[in-house]
Length: 120
Length: 159
Image (tube, rainbow over all chains, first blue to last red; front, side, top):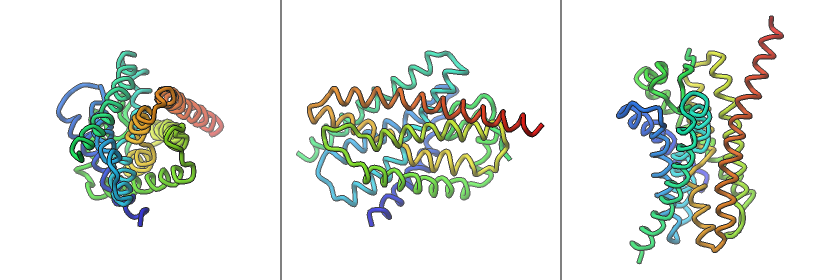
């Protein structure tokens, strides 16, 4: 059952990452990978909130391990950083990693704070 | 057939690469279907690794660390192959966007670090944050370089 919930969550999260990435790229003309940053920060916020309060293991599998896990990615982030370091200004590569880590961690804390505030 | 352009930055989808830009309108159901399938397979493999190597609340999240570093090594290798050899239009969406994107995770990375801080071990959190960045970037560069060298060797042997 847990495996099935992970499958369902991931089958939604991975295509949503792809579609969000396309939508974000279509709206600006920068080489900076804002699309991947968007999904990584949004997924960290949601997972921070989901794991902040005691939740049903099924919800954790579906939304946490499945959806947030597949929505967010390290492989895409690392490859983008490699390409930015080789093709563009080095500063873009450093900024991509630093911004991802700081914003992702901040989002995790924010999600935790919001969920605990709402749960009272 | 799609041959990613040299201008690619984003391996998931890069709208400056003509084949990427056209793929969703050309076969939307197939592209989204293989991404969903690959993502589910990758997520199951990640969950398996996390279940096999659980970590205590104050411990270093080795399973997620290993999954992320391995996924970065493999995306480097995959993109090196796809940059030099033409492949079918669903190969990158399935293996890159789906399997490796679903296998690796940024949300667990960020939230694990937040939990380590909350558990009173900020030093471990900082070590985990830094070690993942360093190992992930070394892994993607190694996957790219080693695969590029192997392909060059095979190309040379064929001539």
